[in-house]
Figure 1: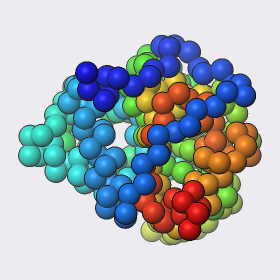
Figure 2: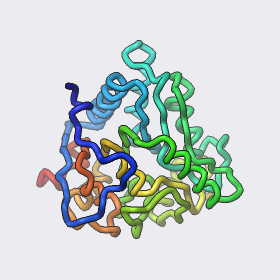
Figure 3: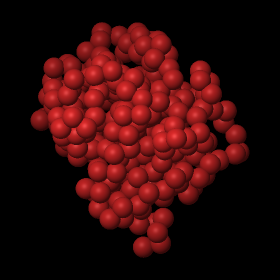
Figure 4: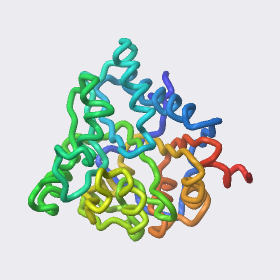
Length: 268
């Protein structure tokens, strides 16, 4: 039995019930960011090799860029084949033209989709006229592709502790919806825009409840700027004040961190 097959799973079609019971995530601390990229990519590749028809929830932003590069290289070398794999992205800005270089749709094309044949790829339509109608469409799309075998998430900047774009106040049973971005999120992400003033005020995101339905969740974090959020998420109270802390009500979470991101956990 492989590592992917032996993992505890959430019963299909159900959200984990919020409770006082929490589970300690599997903690993997590595020397540097490059090691995190390699380890996370290896877990995803193992999942796809074990089950080629896997359904994956995947993130965007700076954190997974190196990971995607290694997956692309492995696919081009014939080590892994994504041609039967389904990808459902976590989030997208709204409103934004999907063709814009600043959109997460463009991000995914640059870093994965333009380089590797993928069975099916889905991402919220940032250009949809109605955010609420698009959220409803994407919620139904995600429901039709359950169960998600593996969800990969990062953690938000500063003290946001968001996963996806689930900002403070998000509840563990939340589903796909439009959210207003926290000021810290907008300030951190605006620097990635060609024109920082054009960053949208909101986004479409999978909810925490959607993320928690995955059979297995990988949290990746790199750099000293993520250390406070990682510590709050893994050691602080489980509450909507730190949405990522709800990962601890899931029975199977692997946190893959570099030493800088884990420094408070390690007592440095």
